[in-house]
Length: 275
Image (cartoon, rainbow, N blue to C red; front, side, top):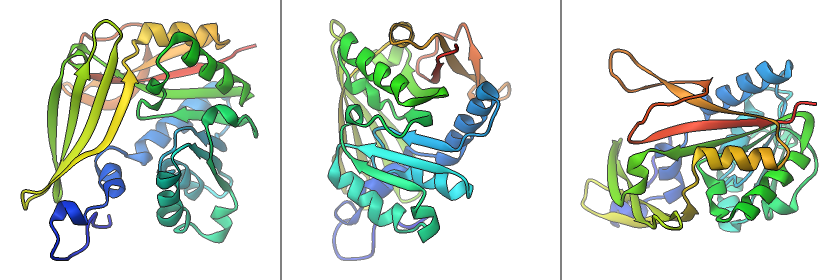
């Protein structure tokens, strides 16, 4: 992995690249793409070839997808031009010319892009939580359904648990920096939440509010109901299993009807329309 900051006389926070830090601490494209591709193939009975990444950020996932197989194609969509341009410089440019021909990076609102139709649409890292009303989220799901092939699948992640309703900070140590997840504010009446990501460094410097998100904390029943209202008639929650030795999550997600009352959990939602 490339170092997220070069050598200089500046503090480590001043030298750091927030996008590299995010990818090093938040994203792990290999197991995620493995889950997405295996889930699609088990449902559709054919290999996944065309992926659409909504709210793609740096398009790290989409670029890794086209790199993983010579027949894979992708479209990556984001409204933030600065972040998308970073992805073009660091991920798209690292692809071979042939791989570049199989990916399109689009600066636009995800609601403005409906073609070409994808086998799978992914909306990861809770990005769709930015839709704060039932009407807005249902409209996004309707748009996704229209943008999928007949056997296409929408796959998203979700988080919750009783600690998701608290204002708290959690720190995780990585090589050369500390990742801080800050649930900065939560309104129990509206479920509006402000979440921030900070980074701290061994020299004592800090990158404060490297990322900030203004979301509605949706519940799994609400999301499932809205997906069905939007026209998806097969909606499943894929819950993480538990490692018997450690009692922690084992990274294996299977479709379940009931889950554990964990303090904090991450699950996948998988939705399709079966004719």
